[in-house]
Amino acid sequence: MIAVGLDFETRKLTHRECEPPSTLGPHDVIWQVLEVGVCGTDRDLATFHRGYPPPGEKFLTIGHEAVGRVFRLGADVTDLQVGDWVVPTVRRGCPLPCLECRRGRRDLCTTGKFTERGIFGRHGYFTEFAVDAAADLIPIPQTILSRAILVEPLSVVEKTIATALRLHPATPRTALIFGAGPVGLLTALALEVRGIDVTVHSLEDPSNPRAVLLTRAGIRYRTDNLEKADIVIEAAGSTQAAFRGLSLLAPNGVCAVLGAHNGDGHVPFLDMIIGNKTVFGSVNAHPGAFDAAVKDIARFSPQLLDSMLTRKPWRDYGAIVDPPAGAIKVVHTLSDHLH
Image (tube, rainbow, N blue to C red; front, top):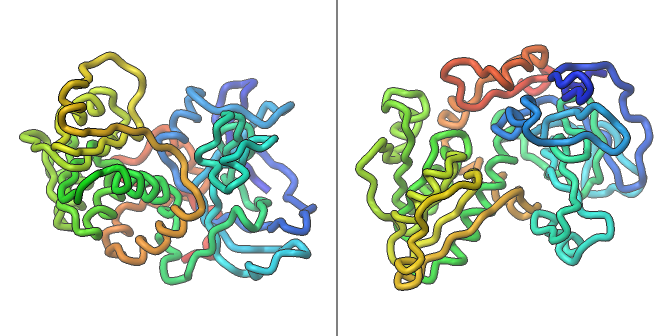
């Protein structure tokens, strides 16, 4: 079978032939990967700005957003059936493990010794077959199958929104999102269905497909003239946006930082103290957030979600570093059985 990934000797994004999985433990599942999504993390990986292969290897199969179908079951697997559609979680717990990993919150691992499929120390899903513990696979109803590739990025959003709502001491009514990429768009949709008045800020012209999609969803899009909001979410990968977000928090406001890198800027500490304001970071997600993502995708407009997706055959994996013009979310297809 083919596997697309990083050759750490040649420093190239490439593909290779490898043996399909044949052994599985009693609690494991072999599943056929049919689609793999691409995000900013994959672009960073493809340019060797992050990531590393499994111990003793010099190749990392990438891909952490995936959809597939159960192919073979371990002897003790009872909650999945052959033919079921699934989405995998990404993070695997630290070896000991720590308290958070033991209680099923590997997204909160305290040792930092976790691995992540297709990113850190463990092969990903840009290949034809994969093996996972059944507990690491989220069942997907066929009604959302064509949009299920968005479950993993939406799971990150679900965790972030749940944290923001828990931290806000009052009742948030407005939200401001920096960034109109897939995570920003999904965040806007998830907040909008919760009855929160959402504004998305980005630098693209209002005629850009991302801005048009938001307008079709009834969500405000602005390139300037921003107002303070109860919830601010930085989803732009921009340090400047994160600092600006702090300045635009309303009293009692909560700011989530999802993609900004380290940098220097003004932090309004006194204003945050007087205004009871909170800032937090969030990464990865837990199975409960994946379940919430599955439910929310069923609530979103199918037409809007479909318009986010640009599908390419697996051989066009060069689109990871050079996406097609106008594409919002590139998805690579390994089989035509999904459609």
